[in-house]
Amino acid sequence: MKRLYILFWLLFCCGLASAQNMPRVRQTIDTLTSETMHGRGYVFEGDTKAANYIRDRFAAAGLAPLPPSNSYFQTFTLPVNRITETPLLKVDGRTLKPGKEFVVQAASPTSIGKAKMLRLDTLIFSDAATARKFFSGDLTKYALVYRQQEAKRLRELPEAYQQKLQQAKVHIVLQKGLLTTVAQQQSNIPVLEVLESSWPVGAQKVRYSIQAEFVPAYSTQNVLGFVEGSIHPDSFLVFSAHYDHLGGQGKGVYFPGANDNASGTAMLLELAAYYGQPEHRPRYSIAFMAFAAEEASLVGSRYYVQHPVFPLSQIRFLVNLDLLGTGSEGMMVVNGKIHAPEFDLLQRINGRGRYLPQIKSRGKAANSDHYYFSEAGVPAFFFYTLGGTAAYHNVNDYARQLPLTKFPEIFELLTDFAAALQE
Ligand SMILES: [Zn+2]
Image (cartoon, rainbow, N blue to C red; front, side, top):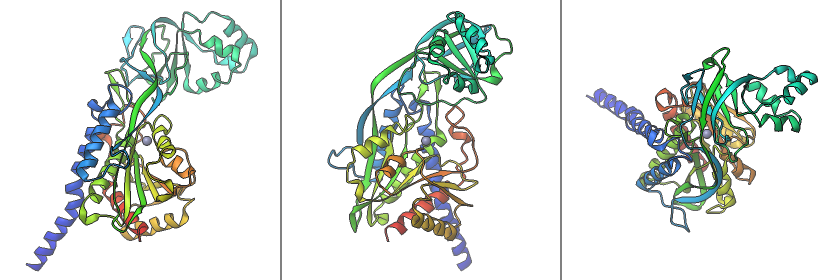
């Protein structure tokens, strides 16, 4: 009987982490990556829908909005170039699949038309006479086709040649994989990025359509909430994760951003739910920051650091969560080499709990939202998982392919680490 009782308890306790939380985590990630949220940025109000959802989850978890505004939102603007219609690309009569076989480069202007193909002569990079000849010709009727590695070399050509390149109707860059970004400006050259494997050998002509709109002051928002500490309310721990992603290109293409960063946002919401319960009330205050516009080079977190809601000096430690969807090869800690005592502490906790196969560390990097905090003197780590999926900044980063290999273990690691920091 006693043994049965223990067995029951074991099942019950082990079940708690996986049976109770993981379906909710999956649900969170499914919601954030759904078509309704449209890649959480810049078109069809995807970012605002995601922000509303996070705000409601913060409120349901019992987080308080940050004073003095008494709102969970911190609003700011940024310039952004957005692609408002599903792009079209037909090569010799065959329509390529938008999102899967090609995308519009983020900074492209509007451009619609037909063009004959002109393959870039790579001799222009090594032979001055070939370059002179190539650039003395008329490029205005052509779609200029070249490989990704040549795009970089084109930008190093003399100014006069760069000007000439702008005459081409459209540029077509052939790539091994597609990788989209967010552009804060509009360029003069319409560019389509096409999977090399989808490009027909000896292609003759294209028809294409790109609809872009430059918005000088696009309004978006960080979502902020906190739990007041029971003993040291003026000392803060901060958990942060960016909820924005790349948005979409018209109705037909959106970037789900499951690993980047629905995974970190889901972790942030799990932590909020945990610390929002009275029995888990922390000794320090804990702030939860869901940042916008990370993909536009950390604009949301930079704005926060420039407009902090409480003094940055009150932050004992910040842990930024971005790309938490795998973990078969452990985790990387950016700034681990800078904050040695905290990194050692993290290693000891991991060893004791046997959470992750390894925790690696590196130095500074401007690669996520911890960066401006760190530069402002706030001690901060950035966690990202290692191993598993390679899908990144394209339509393949969807929820179903995300293994969430070590998600429950990282949750345990984070709460243990936070507990140790408050001792
Ligand atoms: Zn990210």
